Image (tube, rainbow, N blue to C red):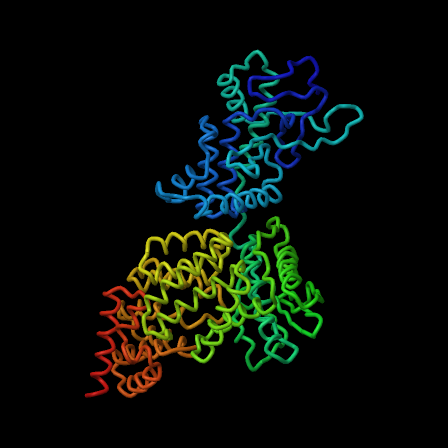
Length: 611
């Protein structure tokens, strides 16, 4: 069968290719029409391809990015492509108002980048045989539609390997409908072939999704990196390597990521992971760091969690300077993501900040991050002092400004401020985090810090907006989910906040205590006191006076006087909370109804002990 003697174009806008046979699908029995790359794709086929993409379980875009894709495709098909600017998309898709400033809020630019990656991943895997391709060229939000170039086997006789046959009345009805609709009756043979191609596309779109019992995404557990060389610098580098690797991995699609904080290397040491799929993991990532005067050596190993076999191992040795270390971190994130992601997506590095000019600056940020894993008062002043020196020495280093903002927030809310005025500290935090965002608008660390600063200055709508942006940027990061959930819950929105906290806990092997606090408060409000006690006691293993308050409240409701007394005694050791519990809660942004509930519970506990 040849195209000889037929017109060069048809009413579909598809330029027909002389001397090229149909491409036949041996599985479906359907055939498709090859078209040149420069031929126009009819709107009906674009709409069909869009529906196919959005219905595919292999298209990994978030709901927001799916709405983004549908909006720009629909607008283009409607002839309004010229209106697809960042401002228009922000208002229509991302819930921004007419004060939206694309320079201050990069949500559209960032989400467009992620959407391009989502489409690339889809077409690499399940969409590789789709007849139409939808792409978003860089530098534009106007989508491009093109026919997928067919791969036709060479046939010396120029005869197709298989004949076309029409086996169903459905195919005949489809053929009649399309020939009538597009006015191509005079090209009946062409119409019949095109209808067969349509039948193939319908079949492809209608294929059932994979069974839910078949895992689509491997799960990855990232363990803390172990410092093998004695000394504080090596310990801090090990913490930094684990955090940077995790941060990079969260940016990639194609697998579920679980993390474990540094204290997970307990008395068991760095023993090999045990078989049995911890948390359902397919892979476990472990690493170690050694340092000398001249170089740092980083070794990373990926284990198969089911049989404990080593899947991949690599050792990097680099000069002891921030630039090479950050390069190693990026290389590790990219290589490991490629190994564990297998065929689930195309791995790409996101834009990273410029490294600091001085090694001291990098070490200082790591020191501040180590302090914030425990919030110990003894570690606060050295961390604050070194950050203040770092922003003077390295004013273009975004991470140092973000961490400085975090510490100003802690100074205000934990009572560490020298002048005792939390509002002064909150204003300083907002100034520092705004500077961090100005230097690196897409930094997850800066976005989280800015959202927290808005919360503590009472700008809750701005805090929520930045939190949504941070989640859109890194939807699987448990720390982002936990921070946003905590802020929602302490403001009284338990219905949204608690599910976020639970999602964060599901992603973390040993969640920090503050992930659990407002889950316990929610159980208290529901009258589920035994469950509340279990959650509060779990939290108390890793911190804090607030856990002791919750334990006292739960034991009071359960009528356990001695246990209540012990918990209140433990709470009294935390001066900021014990001296003024209501003030402590309000400094953390607690809504009046939350303060009332907790203070009522505290008074009941005190009354039980006094009786």
